[in-house]
Image 1 (cartoon, rainbow, N blue to C red):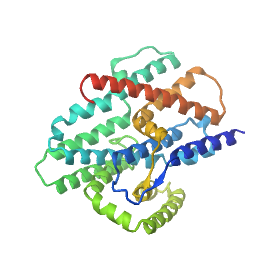
Image 2 (cartoon, rainbow, N blue to C red):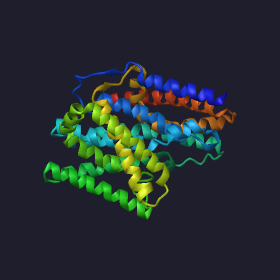
Image 3 (cartoon, rainbow, N blue to C red):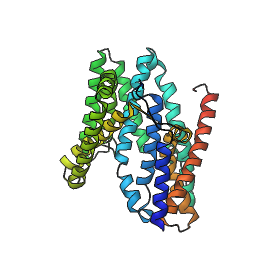
Image 4 (cartoon, rainbow, N blue to C red):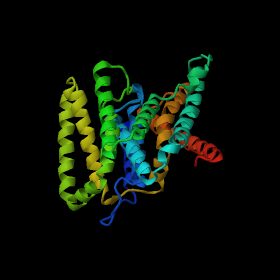
Length: 338
């Protein structure tokens, strides 16, 4: 019965994704804001699934959660692509870079971290809350801010735009490789996923040419890329434990091919409905708030079946993320950021 409930829930999520999906031959945008927002929203659901505690896991959740690395890679990719887009549209973009970026990134992270810390103290019966614990935000956010800093510093250097791109890519790749071999945690737990930021930088400069190729050979490219994704997926399952070549190189290649496949299919496909738009707009909060949901259910100390636990986690995460988003927007509007 539990498996049936899980299948129905996944079917519901899939139905939401394809609801009002339209084939659009005249589509002209490539990785538009609306597209990236929706794709991030979809991947945020996958990321929640991969973090489900082992005691409540199941085979379906585990299979879908295996693609979370692709989702994190896309989060980094879309961040870099968004930075490039904003910079190209506004020559003075870097002047107010931190003023506009920091509050949007840090405010929800700090608010959620405070809630998380309070819950941790209640759950583990430890009420010694310190200032450092309250500002000790999610490590993924820290890595994202590090990449923002690299982007900012490099773009302040007086060299050609192409040279800036290659310099950013080189730094990101070096951080990733050094992190993998030394375990210094320079990019926390995402040495492979962080390559997405470098990919986003490279894609933006060539977006028009990529869009032209994607649309011109749409059917052929789509079929070939889906086949390549399946082949690489099988290779990864077999060799994922092999040092460097499997767990690093192959994982990066697999994520890149899957993302290219998604981007290829998306050039003539319009995703979007009220529910997907809602999830997409709170995807950042979903990524952060999921940990609050896990702790909250731990505090309740009620035993659930796997599927019921997962459904409740999603409900709590959606509600909590929406509330945090509304609070964020209210504060940011008051201080003149929105």
